[in-house]
Length: 274
Image (cartoon, rainbow, N blue to C red; front, side):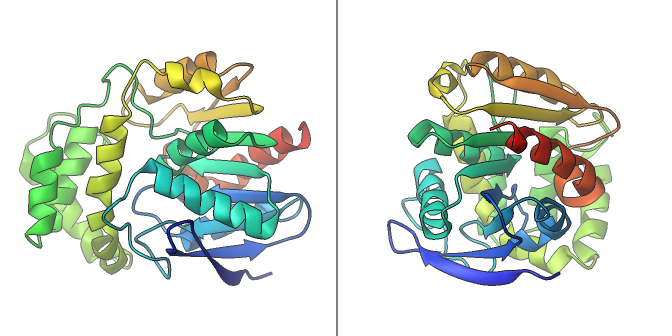
C-alpha cells in the first residue's frame, strides 16, 4: 500500500505538504530535524492498519514552504493544526524535534492522544547549545560538512565522546557523500532555527504541566547522549498523568530508521486506550 500526497495552507499562508495512508482514527506524525515525511513511511504504513496516518513534511523540507522570517515553534504548531483541521485527525505522534512541536500542539489545543519519542526538549540546560552561532555562520557561508560535524559532536549524537574534531569531520563527509547526502545538505539550513528554538525553550519544564492530553513519552536505552532517557523520564513526571516507557535495544532513530515496527506497536497501543 502506498501513500497519497496532499497539501494545506497554514495560518500564515505557507503551504504544508503531507503524506497519508490508512483508514480509521486520524493520527498526525511529526518528523525530527533533518528528516522528511518519506523517512517515516515504514512507521506510517505500520500504523495505517489502525489509523488514518498523515505524515508532515515540516517547513523548509520537501514540497512544503520555507521556514520564513517569523519562524518559531508557534508556526510549526499552526502547521500541525491546519493539517488536523483538514483531515479531522485528533491524535499526534512526534519524534525528536517533531516531539517538541507535538508537545506545543497539545499546549495550544488538547488532543485525544499524544505520543512523543525522545522529544527535542532541553531541561535545566542539559543540552549545551552554545555552538549555535558558529554552526549558523558556517551554514550561511555555504559549508555543510563542518557544521554538521560540529552539530553531531557538540550534541553528543555519536559514540565517540571527546574524539578530535577531524574524526567527526571524516564521518560526516562519508554520510553526506551517501545516498541521503544531497537531501541532508538541502535541509541543513533549517537546523539552526530549530536548535535556536530548543535553546529558547530550555526551562525547568513547568510549562508542560499545562498539557491536558493523555500522553506517553518513549525513549530508547541505547540513545545518545546518555542523559536523554532520564530527561524523558523527568518530562513524563511533569506532564499530568503521563506515562514513560524505556524500550530496550532502541536508539534515537528507532521511529524512522531502526525499529519503526516496534515504535508503531507502542503508539498503536497507547492510542487504543484513548
